[in-house]
Image (cartoon, rainbow, N blue to C red; front, side, top):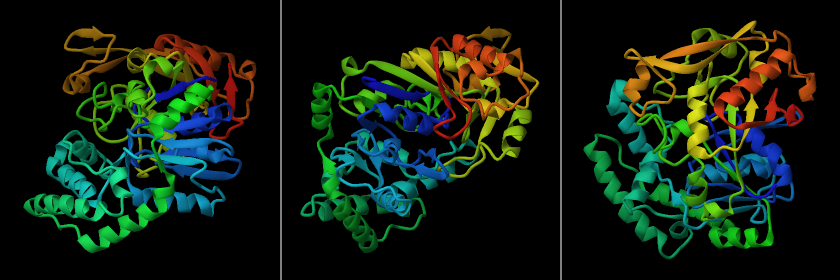
Length: 423
């Protein structure tokens, strides 16, 4: 398998959790490199459903080591709750199968409060964040005033640094008319979490370099998707980290010349959660998918916005990520359609564009140029071999891969491990 970076090729929620779980069978180590508990990976193993937020999806396979890298922003209370929740489902998280970077930044209650206040004040211009405090935590990191895991687990140093940061942020909250954060209860919660997490904390950069020297197979797990990238996404309707493949190196400390290939995950159609432009958005396919009980956010439960497959977007994603291979998920979501549309270009201001404009306001005015494909109008969720898929289905999948510019290597027709085909 070697070292593989897995990224979302759309706006997130592409089914990365399932693909990561499948690929982990061949991996030794799975590394989460960015984002926080604003992400949600849903994995089905037999009859059991697991929703993961901070812990890599590799935790569901025995004998694998999971790493929360330095590029992640970590909510200690959320992580401890996730560990306890998995234990109730029979998945035991220990320092042997989970390692946390000592230089990951920590999310605090004031970050969540500031996140919510900023959204309220934006009114109609809100971004649609999960209000988990991710943006303000990355903001503190960039401003060099954040606290890291290494500070959290230092019992002698943490209380004083915590009080200093709390007092500064309570002044900001008061100025915004918000309720200040209570010192004693939060300190108690975070001290309790620090005690629980201390055995998991290590220098993960050194650990991962030792693993690469041993020839270990490492899977780098992305959260969110390409068009939520802080640099390459539909700014400002983005997350606060680099969700593209370059973030795997900065978020883990493993350099680019140690990476072997990049796999992009995309749905057979398009979705996004939150505000921002979505050129191929379509009410018909939204109603169809929501009526099937699909496309609700794993983290927030919010109804996802849905549209036809956008080849303009995925072509751009292949370019900025260097995608070598594609995994296409949720193919079975299109099973009942007689005709399927694919967005192959945008039309705006009298021009036809075959690339995504950098200006979100221009993108919001873009109208999709569609190409029609015949549907297959038959269930695919029980099919286990590529050769057994209906001819129109295979034609559609190969066509959208060709439009994206990468090789199709995995097709998923449902959430279970066995509903996966390798080409």
